[in-house]
Length: 296
Image (cartoon, rainbow, N blue to C red; front, side, top):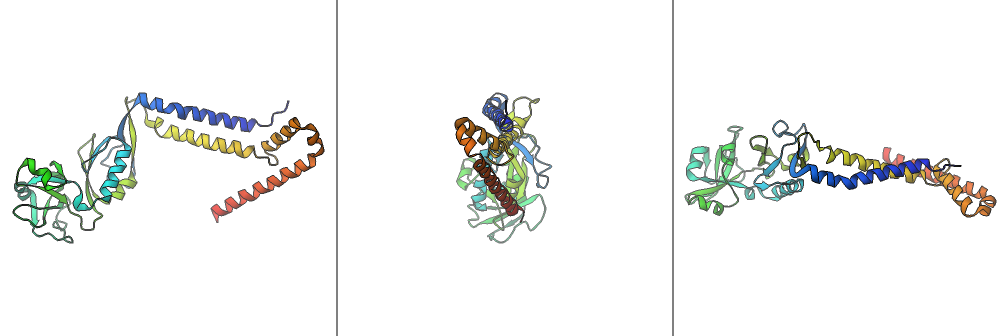
């Protein structure tokens, strides 16, 4: 008995095992996990690395409701596409603005920060009022302001009174934003910076384990591992089955021809060997070109 394709066979068995797991993995997730926007990883270079715990659940970002990882990234894109003055604001009465303000700049211009680095806790907010119709700036403590109800327009605050204004965070460069992230394991996080920093340094997944003893590896690590197993095993099986000299494909081709046409095999054996050598040379040339293109 002759065995010509043991390597190919074992590679395909690995592919089959990986595919079976990938098919049943959604059923595992459905029964042991719930849908939630869970923090999977926060990069160490993230400004909020020490503030946002891993495995915490994101609930809102800048007033945008977050339930899954797709919601998270859609909210980030929405915030990025908005002009800073169109971003989520907060409803404050004129009395509250006066009490919370360290400084009020009437007729605020777009290239002037009303706080002027007064304090790291303070942030410049823009507002309109019936008394002051032009755009005004108020330097207020950011956390105190963001604890108020969210809004987009002054009309959103009318049900709270006639003297209520929707104050918006001010951005002097149209890139820096004041973003409020609400999660379930601590107070809301106030982030000041580019939205790209959040996008690049925080990874969110759409599921959370129902029970504490269940790991989240079934969501990310194990499926990724089996995807690699399937991809590499199939590639190795295909590569090994190519009719080249010293590969399983050499013996598979010769055995197949011998089985289908014994007479042809005996008469054309030398030509078949030449074909294998030619195929081997082509393979070596292709692999060499691939390495040269990668390293040069």
